Length: 467
Image (cartoon, rainbow, N blue to C red; front, top):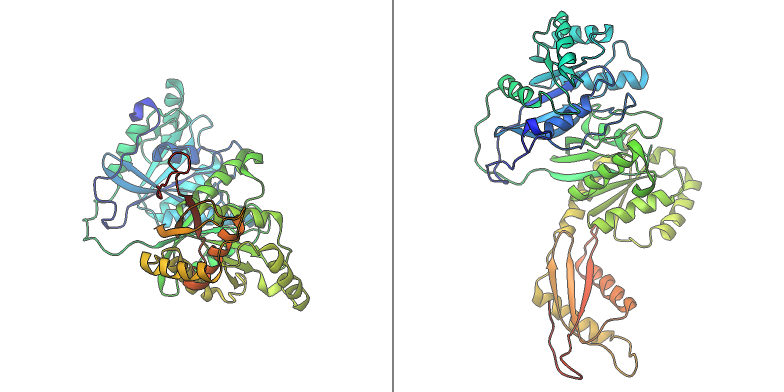
């Protein structure tokens, strides 16, 4: 599908996926609230990923997305609405937009072509001139020829030719992308392939547990807008952060309130993006508020992470608010509520004071090492034979199923298959998983154990393991 047909097709890059290239150029999309910045970002990247809603202020942080046009790759950064002299949360959102401008190679300044230039737009122009960055003036919502003519009035802003675009319908999208490529710096040379990129970490948890505060503490700068009001983060915020001498790719996600099926509007799409961020991550840091009881929401988030098969670190945040009485009850809650996942690594931190945040890097490394552990087949079966001899399967109906052979089918997470003469009791299967962990570790990683009973041939015939 071409740009003129609607959504822009994104093709896979011609270079090898593992080949390291220079840093991609950055295009920042800025403007006052509700001029259609996120819709334009979706049009540029060719997929509906940025959260879009008619309500102003849905985007709060600077959110990077990968884009490609005519064989050139670049990063598009969506920002919240910029307003002069903004205070409190609006001020923090405006500051994020200004940081995006400062770190961009090209700025797309989006103005509503129907409304025309406003005082806020003129104030934004002064901010952009101070940045000395190349600026393309985008007259959005030019859905027809008449509106395109009206957009010529935006010459008055002094940023050169207004480029009429309908982010919603795709008018002018191809011409805009060509103009972006012309404004970008020269493509960097391709470097030799190097080591694997940063490990991907998703920060997840219910609203207001301190995910954005922890990201800012680790980054040593304001990467995400922080507010006492729950639900400030809507889009996943992707940041490269150095922790413990190693660079990690951290994704600050929206707080999950409800099941995706019961959410609506912005919350529904934010939930989908959070689920996608967990799926794309290698390890998840689930933040729990240590000062409050472990809730059903917390349990649901932990279940999502484990069912997705990701390595897991549980960070009990706000430890500075925990007194001796709370510690007593928290120990009881952990014993009761987290008994399904005793293998999860637990770290007590305070994003506010910085307490023990340096322990996160070792915990992440341990969880990832477990997630990628492979047990040699010979060693696995030698151990399993000794285990079954010491603790045989219970006899059912005068007979007990036998385990013929075991193999590790994969890693990330570790997956084991037991070939047996008949189905195993669920309790015995759990027993084997527990003993697997005791013998081989797997701290911080889920482990999957499945059973393949021997397929019988005919009535009473002999068979062999299949799969």
